[in-house]
Image (cartoon, rainbow, N blue to C red):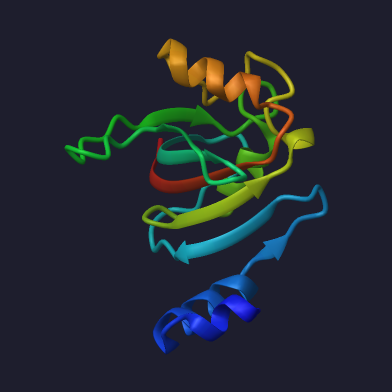
Length: 148
């Protein structure tokens, strides 16, 4: 907390508020609602369309469906079932409403336990980076665009 002494009051408040607004699931996933959606709620077994940004727990960028320069997005469709999507991300999306945004810390035990689980980037570099750090926690920021 010594660092907070040197920050302007505005940033101190942001840091303090964001530090306490999350919930922890029994499997270790930590979820923070950034924007509460107002559309249809996603349920287990649904097919959803999302945008996401994936980072390693140290903040290092891994992959995103939104181009940081042009803003162009390439949303992905994910089935909310245990066979195709990483368990931690499924837990984040179930119960979310369309239009909502969440940030989540996903422990490796419910992350990429298999190379076949989605979402996996198509490009070699991001795919290799993601899978080579599969034993680390990942941070996902997801926006639920549609429940199909």
